[in-house]
Length: 271
Ligand SMILES: O=C(O)CCC(=O)C(=O)O
Image (cartoon, rainbow, N blue to C red; front, side, top):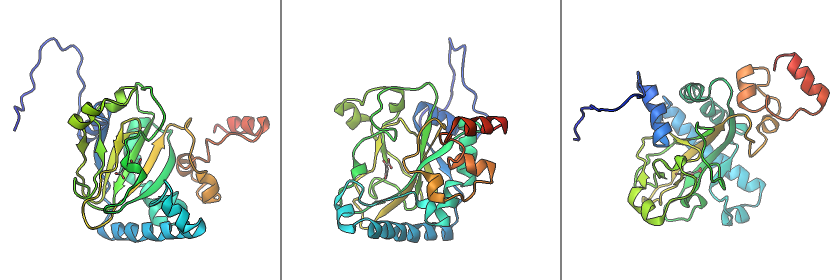
């Protein structure tokens, strides 16, 4: 155990962390990731597990199962919340939404919800290092988006737990291979945990060396100037548009206005 006493000199400014959620926000700011307990029950976890396989099979059947299986998108199920209520409930999990409110304030939007099936001894596109805002090489002084990766199964070094590079959201370039090998970390988390990462933190799925699939549901949530990958309002076909929070969170509020008049009407209504 390391020395737990914290004494210093020459320090004029220091952060305060009054409670557990302040510590999580600080971890996110400094390390680029933190863990958040969802409070999801065992039975809800079972339902998510079964529904993920079901939605992926339905999406594969709707595309062309063989070419999906051979593509970079193999073992990824997309926009799950439009298919099954349990994923809608997961995306609006009170612990997750509460964390987002603390981080972003009142305005934030669900940009993606992806189911990830990491099968033993099988290549997966997510095994490669990336940011969840990919192709971006700049840093922001505050988080503009987070990835909230919900663990359906146990995450550890054997099951294919997510690897992360601490502090990598604070640097524009991807570090050297030596730095990666020395400082990469595997996140250990139990089923029902959200691994919350700054979307600019470099991470990747671990190789699954166990004999069972390691499943997760990733949520990309960010400030409303960012675009959704798949048009969630269209996928939801108007559902929940009457609820101010859900309408904003799912993106109804942030789409471009269809005309000048429509935009002005929205302003007059105080939208
Ligand atoms: O499955 C994982 O461990 C990581 C997933 C991931 O990298 C992603 O969804 O961007």
